[in-house]
Image (cartoon, rainbow, N blue to C red; front, side, top):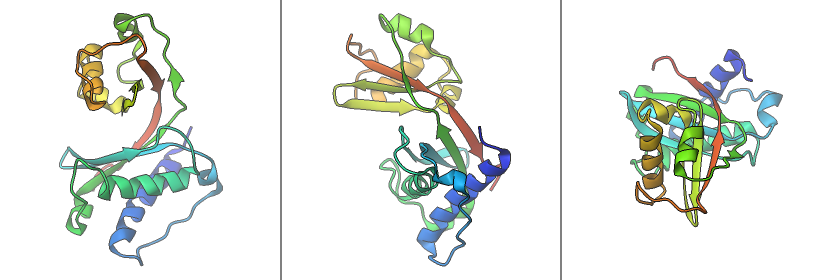
Length: 184
């Protein structure tokens, strides 16, 4: 569990990491010891209420601070759905940081059972089938509040048809602790 102060620092670190791509002399902020612990973070950028970039890690494989700054830069400059962020956009972009809990496998007998176990608004979901893989953060429930619709869109994001189902499909759930800039 992170404090509000820690959340504000993570938001500032994410914004500073992006700013340093435009100006190498931009402020470098302190990195307290808690940022050295392993962590998995998604950084989401929005502009005028619309998604502008979102990149993250599903598993903690490096220090939280490193993952945070790397994914902030990736969300701004490497999300394949968007052109790289322009310097003029940075003041208008709102930063959101989501720190993930470890994912746990979901045991289910069929799609109806899987859908019944999902907790709208709480669960982030990872879907895997063969080389197809996708995730939705819990925040996606705000746009897709019905489990069947949520799952259909997640399958499509993974490159599958919305009505696809196979008994070897794997699902994992995770939670997030999120922090969002109030306004830009």
